Figure 1 (cartoon, one colour):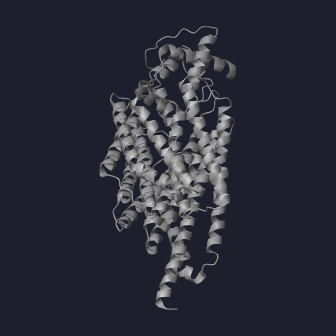
Figure 2 (tube, rainbow, N blue to C red):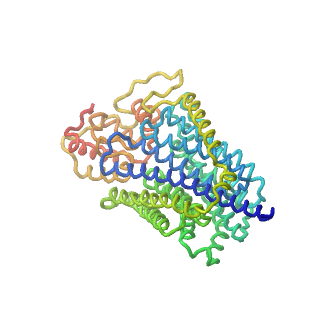
Length: 602
């Protein structure tokens, strides 16, 4: 065989090897997506039944971490590596990072459901954080070797935002130790991480990969720099809404309003040429993989549209006080825009299987997304309009959520099947020479993984959520007033329940409370309502409802509850008369479920 033919054969073998590695990488991503979907399904079941040995908030942490750092990170990182990194020696570095990320996410999936935020879960989370830093360091070097374009610019900034988001995580420890986990800066740090992850890292890389993908198909997308700068400005202005959740201040909603307008303009002019190409070229719209890309683009556009509604202060407030809207919005980004757009791109590059069986898996996934979004946003809207609940809402959304693990199981099952079919005739000897995943470096990287994990686990100072949080040394213990802090000083309770007031109170609770609190004694995000009138005085309950910010900042009992929940109760703008109606409903609920009421009345 002459040298030219040998070179061609070597290139072909290398191409097949990279293709095979991409399938393996995506297989891990889909596996973690499946694991997070199972956690999500368990959370849905909490509203219709009981799951022994697990706490809702621990499953919530497991679901969010595995989804964000397992599925989301690996999907995005895999597409970036196999689109832009051509040197197989460099790919070996990323495979070692993949291995570390797999260990970290498996660790999080095993520890978060058991201990919540604790020594081991924090250790594995920290390991994943360093994996992200390593990926950013090496990938930015490789990206410099690519010709500059709109795509590389957006992707470069996406990496910046990923790294910058981690500042919020590093700030949590010092803030918790010095100011306490109840301080607004603590919650602002968490929101900083989530905001830059969702709206920075993931959205920017989505836009960049869409532009690059079409560029490889021969369609040049030109985006004026003005709109890219506008996108940067909007990213930081819209963080104001996240700040307002924990620290309501005048002007924050106005800043967010300017930000969402800038964002909408930037999205429009960035997506316009992309949509034009997809519409005008028949070849790009005839298969089901491209339909998934379309679903993702539509989800991103809907995200921008919904955020535009936040220019109205009343809408901005309900956007985070009705939890269905919060969950629906996060799913719109991660499930809608990211999963389907980037998943469709991976499919069109054959990095995920595109056979008929896989198509059914993606169909189940898309149907589950659409049904759950309609239920979440629809139910949230009904609560906003005070029209009550969709009949069997919790059971229906549980059924819709079962479609996620079903679809993902089908997709995951087909990955090794299709991979083996595509490469069964590959030359074994050549693969051993060219495949950077031979056993020796894999064993070495595994040993390194274990060593790093042990070091991180022994060095992390985090404890379980049941441990007390460090306060500032000068803080003095304040004795709690059983009436709480606020305008309500004395409540005269009637012997009989006022059924009209209780009915009105139930309507308010349904709209603003049941996403975080159940009417029984089971904890969701917050404690269950059963027995609350036997634990807390009527004055305390009404002050907690109407004066929530001051109560969380100054009342020792409310602060202790916040330390347990780690979710700051939002100001629902409930009037004193409405709080009295809620109290009356809680009295009725305790009479029916606890068999006694008003045990803590002063």
